[in-house]
Length: 557
Image (cartoon, rainbow, N blue to C red):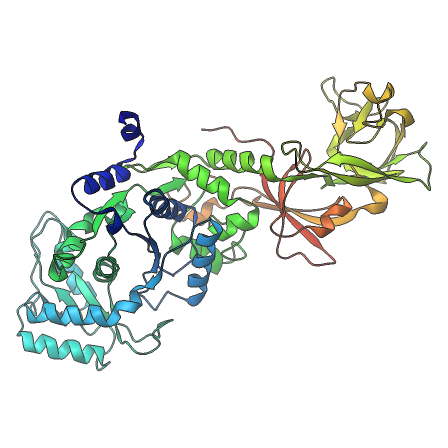
């Protein structure tokens, strides 16, 4: 029992303590509350896994709630993408809710606060309000409207709702403490005028609640027991609790806000505003560009949900923020893909090789395994003929001693096929090799059981039969940024660190089995890396994205 307690993270320990102190297990409820103002990114996966993971651990419901209080930036497209991302990660929610479901209740509660002298309409500009708050080390200045008559605030608030005033003309503020050392408690704005259509409520509302007012009350309305959020909201907790105190019914559960450290991954940014810039300024092709740290981008690149969940599990739940090396994420991607990816042969930088003593009109089908890590994956037949393609880097005319690939006068084995020896080459006018000429040992076919087939040679190459080759376009992706923390320097534009080599496009050939690939299938292009078919593929042009290299070519700093 003692061992089990030690294995609990601090959030689980909080829940265990609450259960021990009388909270019924049937009262546990969690939520994942994204704002639909962009696509989810790698940082969100931590919050998703924490909340839904706790739901699974305790058999408790988890709501997917969209905190849609800002119609200026929120769109149905983002709602749809968030739903898809959460499902793809492998989680199901109990109920789908929206802060906009509660707009009328939030308004009614705000009216009650005005009547109780706890809120007032302020006609100052947002700039004046900010200036009057001062700093944590000095007292704030009360608004000249702070003590206006209650009836006057009630009348103005209703007229704000009815759209009688222009945006910025006035706001509703909570009356708390202008001298509080916590700036969030210095009469925070509860409502602002926004004459913008909402993606769900249309033009019904002309005022919208601020996040702090809507979020905690939404938790309460849904009877969320534990409102878990990132550390940036720690200073907002007193305000969260103050708002709840104004509406709390002792017969109900009072949500408990607790904070955990956000997850930052090297060579990635997780600011929605900055991700929006990458899209808006054409640095990437969209939110799901495989170089983006968005969940949809990682999925399109070929990352698996299982790898991401394992990564989050390894990172754990911390109280302090730190930078997680991207190598760790890629480790889990490789580990998972090694188990599930079908091995295929593809050549991304091809050079032709002619086996001169192989009959011109002959072709045969050779058996090779689909995945040596999975005994149930079976085998497939790969066509072989006189002319094949190999990787250009797999051949040198004169090779150093430790070059274990093909060179003139030396032998290598072709994967699942024969042993060949390179004899001569042809070059173009610029001296580039256009064709390699070789001979093969007819008795050396892999798996034939002959003495020649068991002969040891130093290297094994992948290849594609030229006669059966499937033309493919290959996107070789690298890190989008050249530095670990591209937004660490506040005075330097993060776009200065864009990696100009983040995408290289190559035209190659794949074995014919790839024509049946789907965008859900994962492949290991043998000796090259892991790949997935891209959604831009057509019948006439198959496109594959490199997910990750076979080995880590980066050394941890």
